[in-house]
Amino acid sequence: MMRASAMTDHDRIREWIEARGGHPARMRSGTVRIDFGKPANAVEDISWDEFFRVLDESRDAFLHHDNETSRH
Image (cartoon, rainbow, N blue to C red; front, side, top):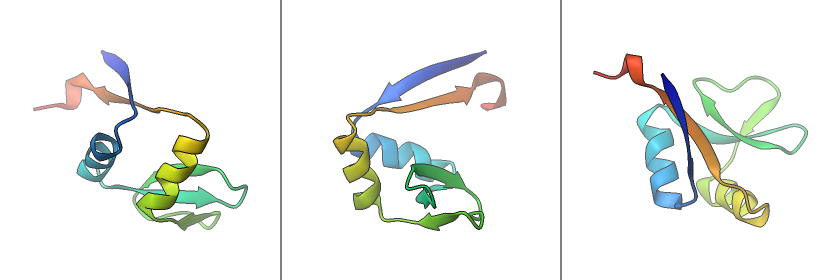
C-alpha cells in the first residue's frame, strides 16, 4: 500500500531525495522537478538552493510516497 506524505523541511526533503538517488532539475518550461537517474534532454540540473527558492516562493510542499512492499 502506498501512502503519500508532504514535507516542507528542506533538510528532510533533501535527505529523502538523495537517499533515493535523486537531484533537483529544471525543465525547459521552467518547472522545477526531481530527477532520478540521468536527466533527459529537456532538463537541466539546478542547485539545491535554486530548487528550494522556487519551492518556497510557490509555497508548495514536497509530496512523496514510498512503496511499502519494496522496503526491507
